[in-house]
Every structure is written in C-alpha cells, then in structure tokens.
Image 1 (tube, rainbow, N blue to C red):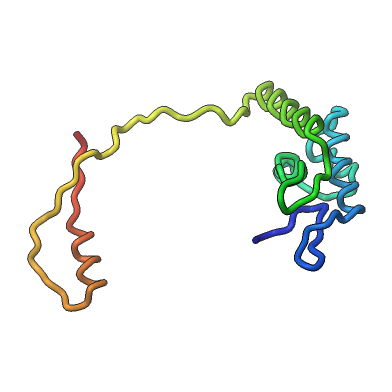
Image 2: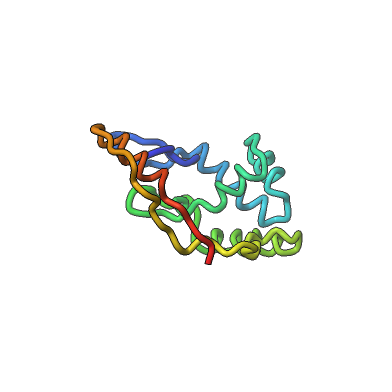
Amino acid sequence: MGHTPLGYKIVDGKAVIDEEAAAQVRAIYKNYLNGLSLTNAAKEAGLDLFHAGAKRIMRNKHYLGDDFYPAIINKETFDAAEAEIAKRSAHLGRDDKYQAPITKKPPTAFRLGDITQNYDNEIRQAEYLYSLIESEVI
C-alpha cells in the first residue's frame, strides 16, 4: 500500500487515527489558515518540515477520509486550505498552471532502416531492431 500518512497508524490491518499526530496535522491546517507560512505552520505544530513537506500534508486527500482512512479534517477546512494555497501561489507567481510552449515540433513519422542482421537471441534481435528506428520531423 505504501507509506502511511502522518496522523494514522495501522492496527490489525486497518488505519486508525493516531491522536497525537492527528493533532499536529490539524494544527498545520489551522496555523496556515491563520496566516503562517507552510514551514512556520508545521513548526508551530511541532513538526520540522520544509514547505514542500507541509504542502504535501495539506494536499493529502486521505485526511478527508476514504474507504481506508478515517477523516482527520473536514471538507471545509481542506477546501479553505486549498484555496489559500492557490491564492498565495498565484500572488507569488507560482500557480503551477504555466506550461512552457512546445518550441520544437515532435517527430511524427518513423521508419525502420534496412535489416541486415538476424540474432538467435530474441532480446538481442529486439534491441537491434529498435536501434534501426529512425524518426523524421514533419
């Protein structure tokens, strides 16, 4: 399944709330919504995190509750935090919506060069054939 998010622990194969850690998660949301930076919100909650780690916690939808994880925060708090993150990111010009324009047209035509060798080993033959593929920018 992967890493268990902060605020939960696994008991008998089920996720349960770790109240001490869940209080830290709730405090991060509260502190951030009260105007602290992501890093300072985490520090005030007793966690030594960089902004990316705190942001990852705040964007984790497991905290809303799902089929496996019980809810730690309510939807209103989560949505308010998402809106505040978007607002601050846009204000700083970091809204993650910018995509660099494609400056080079991607190759759209491929052709296979002349096959001059045959190998008994299938993997070696596949590598050889793959090396013969040539692309053309149209």
